[in-house]
Amino acid sequence: MSSIPSSAASGPARAARKTRTDRSQWVGLLYIAPAIALVTVFFVIPLGMTAWMSLHNWPLMGGHSFIGLDNYVAIAKDTRFWNALKFTLYYTVIITIAIFAVAFPLALFVERPGKMTGFYRTSFFLPVVVGFASASLLWSWLLNVDSGLFSPAAYQLGLTPKKVNLIATFDTAFWSVIVMVVWKVAGFTMVILMTGLQSIPGDLTEAAKIDGANAWQRFTQITLPLMRRTLALALILSVAGSILAFDQFYIMLRGGPRNSTITAVYWIFNQSFVSFKLGYGAALSMVLLVILVVLSLIQLRLLRNPEGT
Image (cartoon, rainbow, N blue to C red; front, top):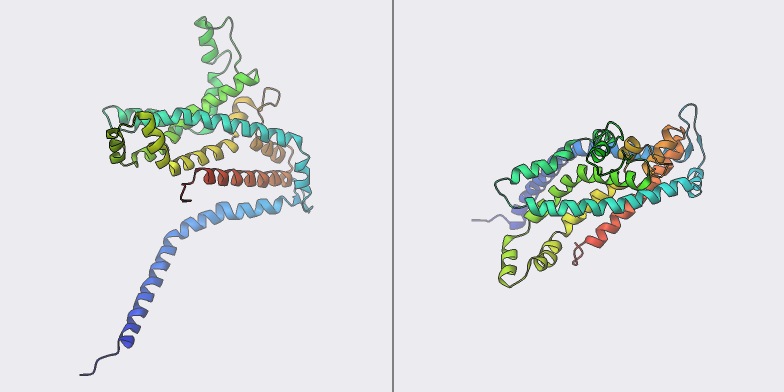
């Protein structure tokens, strides 16, 4: 009997495999098509439009004219923007440290399942579901010197000789915002860190205990190294959210006292929708985007694993 050559037999098999591969690729593309559409409509196209607007003198009313890089040249001379950016970076450092100082102990506290763990997790996470605008309005009432909670309560309890306006000076206003944001955001960071803690194999911790490692040694030599990616994610989200801070300073402080709490996004809003210089506001947005991307890349590089992953 004559046998079919193996090369001839493998041809149809290769064609069948290629057909299946092509079909699976098209199915995969079909699954991600909605996500691609959303990213294109809500990120790529607006980003392109913003970059185009930044090259124009674009008033709110009337026609616009192409001016090239004039808006970016003006940014270099805009001392109020750089002061706002300086304040934003200062706020970012303080709030990031504060959030992690609260969220990490909370994550360690609720990591292990227990009788009341579900209640604690829900309680700590509950402020996250409140919108930033709503939270800012709530805390604006709490901080009100006459009809609020904190100042009248402190006065009634004899802690202060008179009612104190907590948003009258920079220090008290700034730290009031810090407390509000930590209350609002720490639960979200807690969940991220808790997920990273739960992914650490329990065998490693038990082996370290048997070898005589104390709690601090286990935390620094096992927990933190194995949570690099989780920490990087939480840190990037925290820094990005802080760089883009607007609601709390606009609603609670209106940039006061004496314009000392104007953030970068607040200044962009002011230039775009108060002064109606949309082209200049677009240029400011592009500069802030570049700064945010650079900071994110630096964080990823600092927190990557020694193997480079």
